[in-house]
Image (cartoon, rainbow, N blue to C red; front, side, top):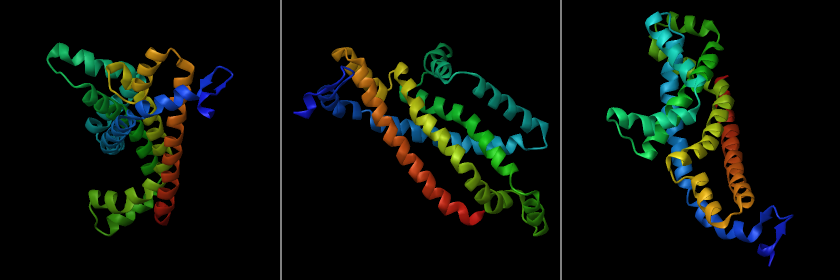
Length: 226
């Protein structure tokens, strides 16, 4: 049978096929952490972007410091701080909660800069027109600025989400049973690291292809605002 073939000793098809159901058992967790982290990042990143653009120094500088810290520290270190460090001061998070919160807080810094650039790319005349129509700040942002900025921000935001999906593999070090952690379990009992790591890479790839397809559909939807 084809499942007994190997490719130059690098990829054991039989082992990959037999291990696939177990490895895919971590897919819901990978997607769950990715989506939750992205949702936290989008919400926090939106307000951080507005704070970065604020003329008030009390809003602008805290946002700048937060973004600088998150972009300047490895996400793995931050996951360790949340999962292993916080219990020292009496705050204990589950591995799943630490992963979702860690990826969300970290991605918010990158999303904030994407959102800030997209908002700043909108012609200032849009703000002046809204002011002439007596629209308040939040109505202007919600109905005029955000719809136009979304189309501009979509490609880089998609890249952030793709990076987030792949970065969830780091959650394996704090025992979150996602794709990579499941793969490592099989590697430990089969001793065929190359086959299993190639297998998990081939799982991440189509996930990112699907995300890219969704991005194209969303770009077409928001094109009417440009």
